[in-house]
Image 1 (cartoon, rainbow, N blue to C red):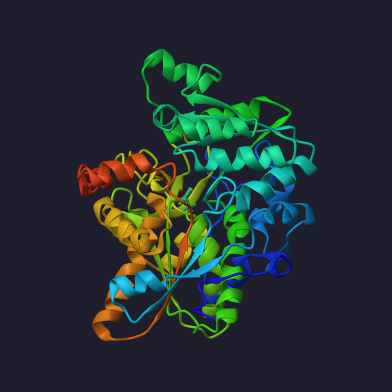
Image 2: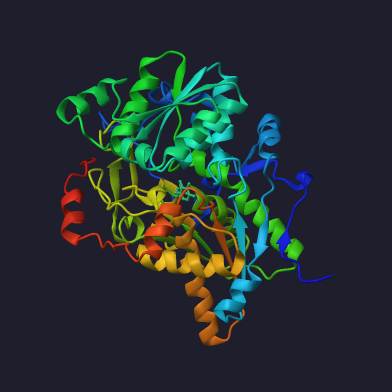
Length: 457
Ligand SMILES: *Cc1c(COP(=O)(O)O)cnc(C)c1O
């Protein structure tokens, strides 16, 4: 038998529980600051969130239980694509000339092509269980809208997606994908909400933004008895659901007879795929005496972990979402139009931010030219075409592999390949035509946005 390329788990080895890092934060000396009400500045309680989310998810948001059982109905849907493969990047190692051993967890095999269904499916399930008939959400690049449309279809819910208008026009096939799962997709700003109508009255040609689309989706949910809202990243319950990734990876590394990883790398937008692969390894660092370095890679155009400050800020431009203590660039930060649309958020998960502040994880930022170079080096050797977002993780893994080449060390590197790039070929086309600009976010602009941070007592 030749070398083992893919390490596959059987369906019976799929995790039956999600791992909740809240349980182990105290052992790491971390107390997570509570989210605050955007109007009153007081800590929010379950009642504040109940117009938006079903109670099961609100309770997961604040749970301190180390493990939370994955309902059978959710596991049944997960089995469409889970367990996902862990793949050894032999050919890429050879191409890089590194003695490092590189493994990647491939989440691009899900129905919508990224890690996002790992949370969309349980979110749709818990809403269905509590009698909700319809979910509203926003989507930028279309990954989250696709995942939620799929999940709603699996549990018989209607789904309304407010898609940022510029993406709606640039990525028509993401919209068609959502429609195949029965979702209603409108370009945002839309005439369907007060928030959308107000923007259109001012500027009929508005190309929209994630902030506007969030306001529309939240208004939709608050105004209708039968509807709740769903968010695809940032919140504790979202990162919780994603921990199937890291738990599977640990089992797969054992099966492969791999050394315990020296470094785990993932990209960060709001922190969900990063938390998903990294938290089970953080657990082993905190409670199991392991010493894995854990590296978040973000774009230079939206460098919240590396250049933002750790402070309370609003989750959205319209100041409707709770204030969260996180690494932020300011809620009115407007990111440059880089192709990694999933990484253009001003803030970061509270859990990921607290780990960074405590020195338990590292973060670096990188320009988009470098990530496409890394992506092409990877795809030429390994064949799989990554989305621009995981190409940040690929770049991060490549830096570690090249350090090993220099030092001669044979370290074990694991990264999260959180989605394929089949809807991102326009970006590859532009890169290969040599026309991708780099963006450094100017320090003055960051300072200006940070001046609008709320003052919290
Ligand atoms: C949404 C998305 C991201 C960014 O979100 P995180 O919550 O930081 O994971 C990254 N990669 C892909 C493929 C995405 O769809």
